Image 1 (cartoon, rainbow, N blue to C red):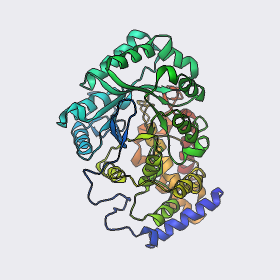
Image 2: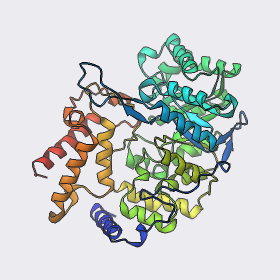
Image 3: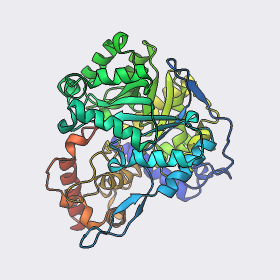
Image 4: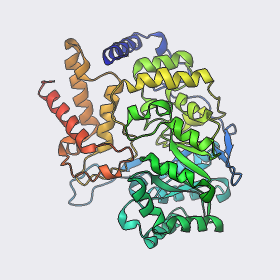
Length: 467
């Protein structure tokens, strides 16, 4: 299907929805965004077992990367009127609700939420009232900067994690983001400084109960670490997996590796997989209208996101599927998807991997997963919000460049007005100076300054009515 055919289908689906078409009639317990609104089970969560420790892990894991924030008063003399801080009260509420409904795996990192995720997670878990033995904490050795590669600095990171999380042991510890920078970076972060040996010692002492790694980037590093499995005895490995990345990872992002290969390599060694980005940074929950129509035709009572979660959970070697659940409705919907899990049929899996995935990649979105590793930008640019607005318009088939003359002006206004609403003008793409500090932190290897220039050029042409 080419781009023109895709746009026609999307426009037709939008028109059908506007006229009250069949796929737009939602069951009584589904809200207009496709989320369930009925009862949330408290005792039906699906669990998987970690072979090395016998842990019964909820198949839904809570990713503490996209925590809710709230605005704060700017510091005197600051021009930043959009400053935010973690909304700890809301985090506490979400974590307690998750625990009450069977979620027991919480994944964080020293790098998340500008370095504050571990602290927030520790506060919320302690405030929940649950005994430490009732939940599992996963965090990471996030020694990304060369200034943190020394043995002393890396050990400081680990010890700070224990303090921030208010615990004396870590259930699941990961070498964070191996693959980025290739083998030289891997050796500098974990081998030449003796930190991998240190972490193995901590596992022997029980301070770390399970040791693994998360993978982004150079496949040589992934293959090398698995070739040392007999020596290191990895307890688990975290990979990016969803029905688009299963076969088409490189069409989404040339730096990625097909999930079929990653999962297969773990499966044949009996290593459990922890899944990140089951929704591709939310993009598989915000699909173009005609793709939504196809999903709703099969299971009108299910949310669009539930297809992606059920897909990931169906794979038998999956230990848990992480989701960064900022809002209560997302948490509730995902709990329903796994309480209990209804595995996909082989035909459904192949349909998602084939027809639906190919429809998705035929639309040129930016492969941002909203991880916010690129933030804060030293020049105040809200990089994830810019990409999110652009991708949202692409997914909705609402890009002015693709419109006929009679619809162009309306689409042009919607894009520009929506851009100003989503991103304050002082934080938009035109403020990028191409310092490239963001690029080295992006696990998806997005050339962010180039994308900023492209989006800024697109916006300027819209403003001048020259597109």
